[in-house]
Image 1 (cartoon, rainbow, N blue to C red):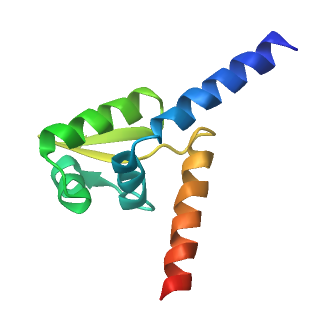
Image 2: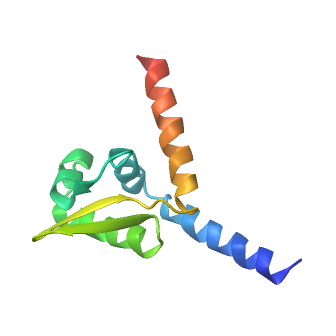
Length: 102
């Protein structure tokens, strides 16, 4: 198998591994189509600021999230590059299920 293809598979598996934690999935759903501060995200996913910050750091490091600073507040949003496509699939699946339930 081509080394480049194996590297790509490894990278995608690494990104998918980020979503093995349910809080990170909740964070992803919370950020669907918007940006929020750490405090807003922590409230939405019902966890501490410290725990939320740790999850956000991991997701940012993997390229899933990006940030914008406004004075002392940092806002997080889903990154718009190709790595975010899997995120969009997860968000879409969640929204579809919520619509079906309603």
